[in-house]
Image 1 (cartoon, rainbow, N blue to C red):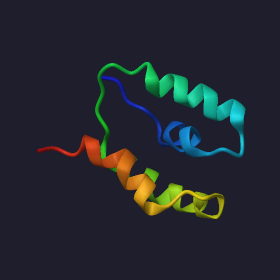
Image 2: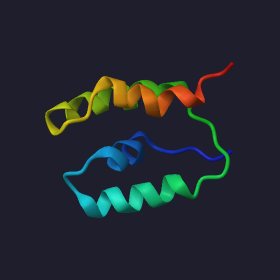
Image 3: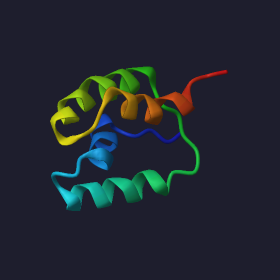
Image 4: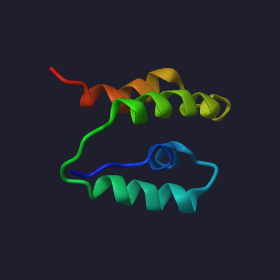
Length: 71
């Protein structure tokens, strides 16, 4: 099982630090299989709200998390 820390998901969408954003995007892009743990999803949605002043919205957060929900 592969797991990703909440911070990595946040850095993918945080344009304030392009270096961290590039590294995080590369890590996520190279995942072939994995599980999004519910706790990480909740932490991600809560933490991503801090990015709202930078143009990131709750809708954007849900677009990231929604594909991982179970059928």
